[in-house]
Length: 386
Image (tube, rainbow, N blue to C red):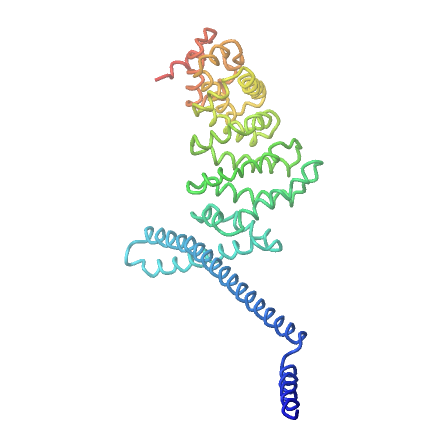
C-alpha cells in the first residue's frame, strides 16, 4: 500500500514538474513571431542595401560615360589648339591656350548641370546657345548628358498653351528660342542627326510653324523653328527627306512662303527646294496634281509679289524650284501652261544683272520648257548657257 502511494507521488511530481517547465502557448507564439519579424527585417535590409548598391553602380556608370564625352571634348580642343601653335617657341603660349580651353570646358559643364534645375535653366540656355558655334562637340554633350534633351523638350512644350490664344511674350519667345538653338546644334551634328530624327523631335516644332500671328515674338519663334529644319536638310540626306515627307512640313512651309516675313520665307523655300532636289521629294510632289498645284501656286504667288519687292534672295530660290520641277515630265508639261509671265519676259532683268548663276538657271528653265516667247534681253540670258 505504501509502495503504491509512493509511486503515485513520484509520477505526479514528475508530471507537475514537466508542466511547470513547458512554456505557455502565448510565450511560444510570441517568440516565434519575434523570430519571423527579425528575419523579415533582415531580409528587407539586405534587399534595400542591394538596391542602393545597384543604384550607386548605375550612377557611377552614367557618370563615367558622361566623363568620357567630356574628356573627348577636352582632347579635341587641346589637339586643335596644338595644331594651330605647333612650334616650340610658342610652347608657353600653348600652355596658356590649354588653360583657357580647360576653363571654357568647365563652364560648359557647369551650364549643362544647371539645365537640371528649373531655377537656373534660363541662364544656362542663354549661355549654351552663345557657345554652340565654339564648342565642336556640344551636340554630343547635349544628347548624351542625362536629362538635358528632356529639359529642352520641357521648355518647348511649356510654350504650347501660349500659342492659342496668342499670349506669347518677348521674354518667353527668347527663352524657347534659346532651347531651339541648342536643338539646331544637335540637328546639325553628323553623329546626333539620326538620333534626333529617330526620336521624332522635329514634330515638337510643328505647332510653332502652324502659328499665324504677325507679332515679333511669334515671327522669331517660327524663324528659329525653321532654322532647326533647315539644319536637317542642309546636308542633302535622303534619310532626312524621307522623314520629312511623312510629316506635314511641306504644307507648313508653303503657308509661311506666302504669309511670313522675308527671312521666314527664305528659310521655308530653302527647305522646299532641298526636298525637291531629292529624287524621292520630287517624285512625291509630282505624284498627284493636288500636290503639284499647291507648290506651283505658292511659287507663282511669290513671283507676283517679287515683281514689286524685287528681292533677289527669294527670287533665286523660286527659279531653282521651278527649274527642278521641270525635270519631271508631267510637271514640265504643266509648267508650259502655267509658268508666271514675269519669268518669261524681262521683268527681273535689273534684279538679276549681278547674279549670273540665277540668270543661268532661268535660261535653263525657259529652254527646258521650249519657251518661244523670249525677248532679246531674255535671249541674251540663254547665251549664258555653257
